[in-house]
Length: 171
Length: 402
Image (cartoon, rainbow over all chains, first blue to last red; front, side, top):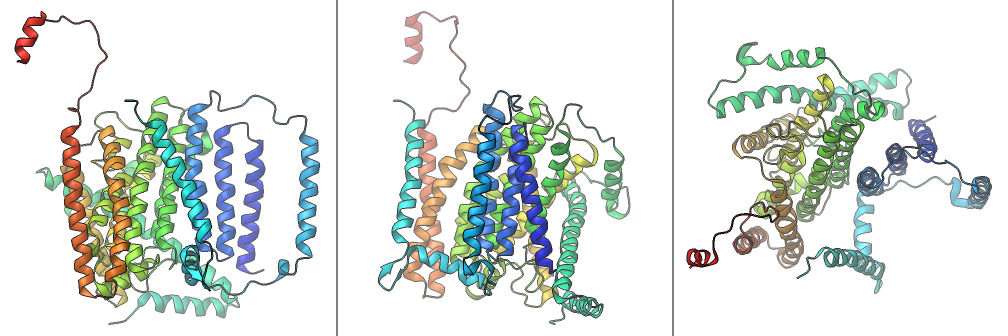
């Protein structure tokens, strides 16, 4: 076993255990903290895949945002510990469905030739600058992701404007 | 001159490990682990020296001697303090959430040690030469926020929780200008790799000349992120006792303290890396480390200096300054600097002067606009709700007004 495999198995175990813990905790804050552990494990996956940019963004966006989620959990819910039922009446159906989806995904991916292929050595520095230029620079006269970038920018601008409009003092 | 003791030692250790029939991968992992322990030990060793330095400098600035009883110049005082910390009673509130209560101080130190992992001490001495170094520094800041929240919530104390909310509001608000101001050096160097940013500064000149405004914004928001005076509303020990760590005692409180001190030093290190050329102009590894630590200690001194000089800022003033002044200024900077650089990027020294000029124009403009806005706004005082008070007859009031 190579060191990378050891890290992979440890990360997988942490992700699975904390994911199960997250959905079974009665305490909202505990659930959020286990969600952080799960997402951190996923960031470790990205590091193993040499996608350092994605790993860092994963931590920046998800773990940074969950801190705020915890605040709202504490501030806005009267009871952080929920005494209600953990499962509702659709629990068994959901279990069957998720097992079916898992089997389906596994079968679909195992016939895909890339599934067991070894990834080529990635040039991470070039990958980041490629990612940056792909958003704006044209390739063969075609702007590759320019439209998507602009749409996303407008989408992000709208909540900003909306927030200012809502928060503005009435004159 | 290019004698590199760490590289020689690492090479020797790698050969030793491979001679024990370990694979090259495992040797790398073991070397990285040793490196992590060394970097963490370095940061905590510096923390011990920092407590001494802080008390000595504070003493001098307040016209007293500071610690001078234990050892020469009081140098052994931190060891006495550490022993006192460890032997203090370690209390846990009965209704506290035990696990998160105990993890929070560890998380506070961990968040800061993560920064130390990517800091280049010299051209070859660097924990991990990460291509996304600057973004990584922004990302690990969120663990610090988590530590504050976990400490405040798990103490099961109203005041600790309120302190945590106050602290998190400050940390999250000032993370915005912190990250936005990091973009300027990244843009000027065309790289997010910390070592490449330093290398670029050796070619074209230190970024303090290119981006003095970004430096000021970075410095101010860093002060707020560390939570030191004038931004120490997380604690405000003279008024509201403490914030999120009110329930912590002994070494657990000591860990929060260690986190704060190590964060201060890491911030000073980032300032010297991003704006003052890090280990430049020394190319040799050990001389570079000396230069780097000299610069970093100087900026740490500046942080202490500010802490000991300025009074605490009020929380609404702090938020207003962030959202109404620093963030808009930073966004203007982000829009104008790339535009200017597009026209002057091949002009050598002229590029430097152009950037410096733009920054100065923006700075003067910002001060003028902010000064007018402050003058126009209402006199700033706490308003109490209206209530029945004795009012003089109407005529008299008009006379006074006239």
